[in-house]
Image (cartoon, rainbow, N blue to C red; front, side, top):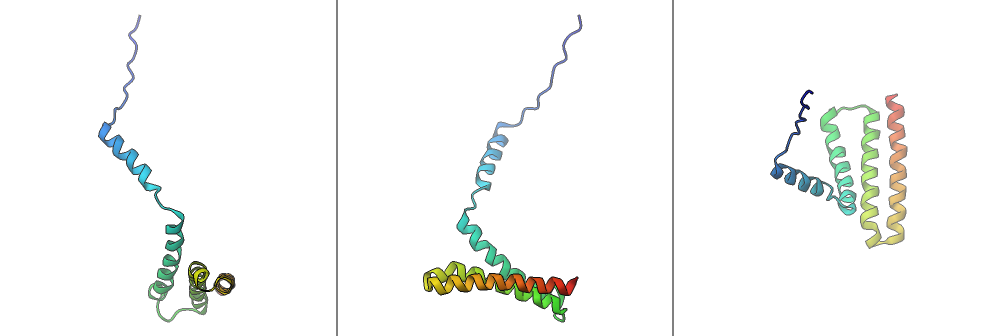
Length: 113
């Protein structure tokens, strides 16, 4: 009778497994207010960096895209702050600016395509 083959299990270092488990638990610590604040900051950074990345003399389509980013940023700002200042006016202006950003984005896509 032949001897059985032994299966080799790789045993990870217990300290490394504990660090990996702790990292996985801490990696999902982003909550809704943090993500809600992070999106307008990303829009602001992209709208400010777009002329630098593409050049100052850009096409009209790029200007439409930049205006779309600024309008979307304004919509988020009024969504976050408008409720505290003037609830009805702030939220109405927020919806208007987000809708305007979609229209401006469509104009930019028409210019590029």
